[in-house]
Image 1 (cartoon, rainbow, N blue to C red):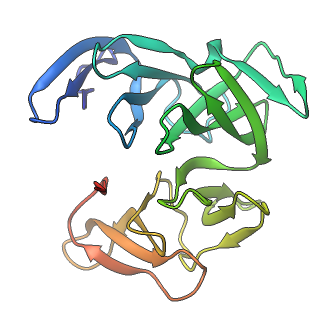
Image 2 (image 1 turned 180 degrees about the vertical axis):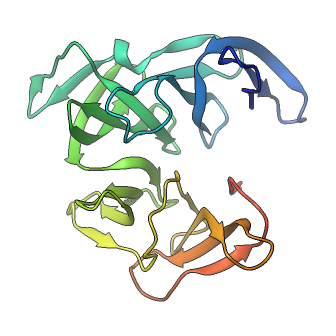
Length: 235
């Protein structure tokens, strides 16, 4: 949880324990964008905008930090990790990372990397402090419960984001039935369905959580009206 109401763009980050009581608190600079906790609860990740307010802002700069939830200690900014591409160390003066999603083995995670105008999906190894480029044009990844697919938003030539699913074995992409531009890090309801937030035009106009099949079939439907930021807790 983060409180970004202050005008100086300093936010307070709070880590809660399983009893929903605050466990650790600290402040950081930036505007909060994405947060995730690993399935086993060992690690957390958050992204802030250091400059800019949108991923489409040419001058935007982000910071993505991993945390040990037991101690509240930072495990590092992803910019401090080694990045590898096509078997070679990939280095540049300016990398931007965001949108972490953890595997059940929380040492493994995925995230978005932007270098220049190119966006990549990277796979992370926390212990090795290593990132490996897997695929292009993948933003805000979300790993499926069976860990075979990544749901993400894909930037089109028109400037819209198309909800898409990537098969991690074949790297085949499947566009989902949602036709509106969705700027969200989606959540998997189960292995067949995707949850996400978008504008709900039924009065009063606000946002609701929608659900759509993960195989490209069907159509979007309201899952939970007047709600946002869905999280599914699995046993």
